Image (cartoon, rainbow, N blue to C red; front, side):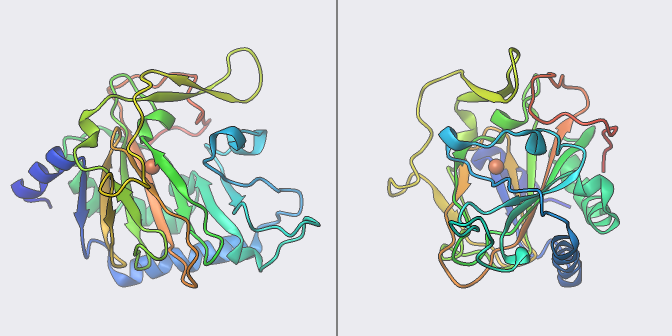
Length: 281
Ligand code: FE2
């Protein structure tokens, strides 16, 4: 699937942008299915928001138990002060996670398309296991920021093997919250680990290196990855990246899949634990 130049670019930059990877109808099928899941979900008891602001990171049972489930997380600004939604539910969800690829046939088919397995193999991931999937809505006007981070903080293996596959299902631009990444930043240290607490409920960060990650507000620290619908972006697990809030009137739906290598150890303190067996492509 990939040329030698593309593999070299991935090694150099820590990310690779592959335009026209997914067929239009395949992306449309995911959008349609996610819409159906959101409209039919019974979320009357669920008010878990997703935020990456560290002080407020929500690590309740609903989140911590979502590794082997299909669960729904709201945008931080989805609710009015009285606790009711300000907009229809399908316009209120921040993301759906984290086992869509194993539990939903439409997402399973997309995630295990042979072309993707070939891309992974071209990048040396011939024993990849699909550990996590997320449908990311980045809703119009209220789409939350995802602060600069390294995926290995949240999905750690020894050695580090986590790799992200991010698919633009709609055009992503600087106006509606496209990805931003630090070229070459995957060759810097892993800054911290997000761990389940050993001494009680919830999670905590363990700092490994207090060197700051690139500041998204510092000009030039990160570059925008503006990607038309159908684009695949592969992300190295230590690459600093994030995405801005969406204040535009257009949504920015994306699908993201993370894999680890079977040969690496997956510690039991990772936040994501699941009863479902891990499977490859
Ligand atoms: Fe990420």
